Image (cartoon, rainbow, N blue to C red; front, top):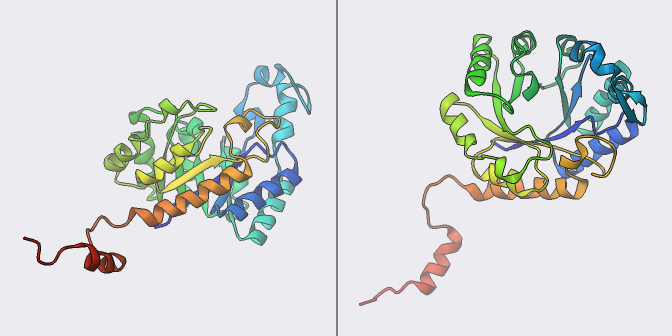
Length: 278
């Protein structure tokens, strides 16, 4: 099974469809299997007080202005759907509320996603599980009991899923990766486990594959200096290309764990190994 590589566009599109298409182009060219977005109904996800908080942004002076500027609707997602189909790349989104999940049902996406922040929101998680689509479940900020409860729900609805080990800091300090959790989660839940990374470099994501991660999700951007809270923890195009290349190399190198003498070794063996050594 090939590692699923997901380019997390998230809100790095900055509300601009041209930037969005360029990011899809980058992910497609790099060899990603899918791109992911985020969908929110602002008045359900945030309180009025939160939305009215002063905040300077390219779209205005309040938190609401900023978040509305980053939110796509039917027209934009229809365009994303069409563009991704033309590029031959999957797309999906993490819903942050029930209405957003209902919205996403308009599109025939292959995957669902439970964001780390939403893992304990039972009505939303149950709605996702009911759809029975293959679902990536990020586990950042979560206790083992909270993960237990979520997995129980997915098993109840017989919904296929894959956990994603995650640390929800942006960017994440290298020492907080705790990649050994990939194996811990695999052993506990008997399921595929990926890595949703918010680190700056490539090494941790590459190591995650070597440790058995079955999917890798990384935020992507055209330029880390662009406006946005997620940009600093994102991969620029050249970094994404290197990451996908390295993941595919590691997949080939992992092998099956069975000791064999390869064909290439046979000739070397004839030359180097003594036959009548005494």
